[in-house]
Image (spheres, rainbow, N blue to C red):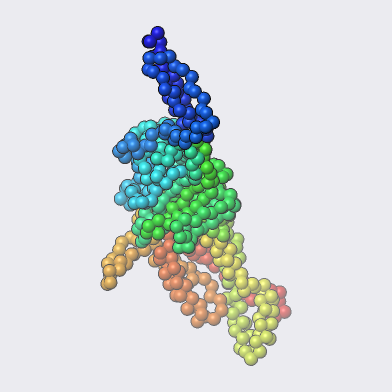
Length: 559
């Protein structure tokens, strides 16, 4: 009998403790006052608790015990988690569950090291790349990770890492990262739960920054303003006008930090996620996604999903990600010309294996396409040269009557079938193509670090050698720009002179010198294009001008 009473008492107490744990974990706080415990001897059978009398004042509600253990109490030491794929090597720290290194294996800098996209490995007081939080404590706290390493060697291999942190407030955040062996993007799934017994306000966040790649080096970095694709158009956010944090509401496709050739972009998969921009120490930018502010009831949870892309600004790669990410590459007004030019360059590269040769072939194809215009232009310049004596005679005859001089000159042009602007037509037509190629070659990661002959990088001036001059200035011998200037002088020299001979002589020297200085700091790929274009133009002029100009028609004869 006594043994049964002890067992019954123990069982009842076990049920009560289990019930209290269940309430603290899954149910809201009780609203009724607690009832006093019955005073029964330990050896007596369990009796029902007496009902509370109306005369007795209700006791205060007792707080429920916590049903969670804050991660900080586990005193975990920060450790590194490594992800290896054929495309990249990513290192994450459990301190903040942030990325400390994101290396691109197929892209290397001058010393042979892989391109590093993380600007600050240990940003003081600022959440690092890929940091996520719903409680302020979680931005810098140590997380629990379910693995130390992830190796994805197969082409279609996929792997996941999960980081979990419980704040003192009872807010648990779980960040699951899904890596793919053949992609530069990572899927991020965030789950935020309220493990406490009270309502808790949350606002899940995910960021990249501060900065990107070598953005701390003001001389070498080509970091651009934070860029977003918002409501179907490109938005550049001026960081100088940002104080603290700036929310950017609207329909968001992506928010990115980028330099000329590489980018890190956040792509929301949930419509409620909006973008924000922050300015960290040293004017380093931070872009992020934030969920809607809400209050989680005890046991409640909210989820969010986004993609993070961190890799090269290769149009084919960006187009494969989707959500208009290929619009990250801004090719200017003549985008519709630049994109086909890039496609043609990459197509020719498959056969030649060298982008320098591909640029030469593109220039040859362009010259073939525009040969009829060039032929007409040079013939027009020859005809202008042939009627120069008559034009000079008219200028002398009507020097005091400008209107009459203009009328007679135009009549002379019409009579001999000469278009005074005909020589300029090919140049005018080529200006959009030149600008398109300039933007394409200057923004194409395909050309980055591409070699040709003595050129080490087609996206930079060729700089065959450097000389230290007075004042600590280095003179870079950009041979390609000098050759381009010489070829332009030869082209000018061979062109049929039109107009005032003194002006023609001045242009013979002024234009090559001007273009040489202008092209001195241009990407060598673009200078190569212009040099080959000039050489082909000289060849065309030699072939076309071998045929003498048509003699001007005499009075009474047809032109």
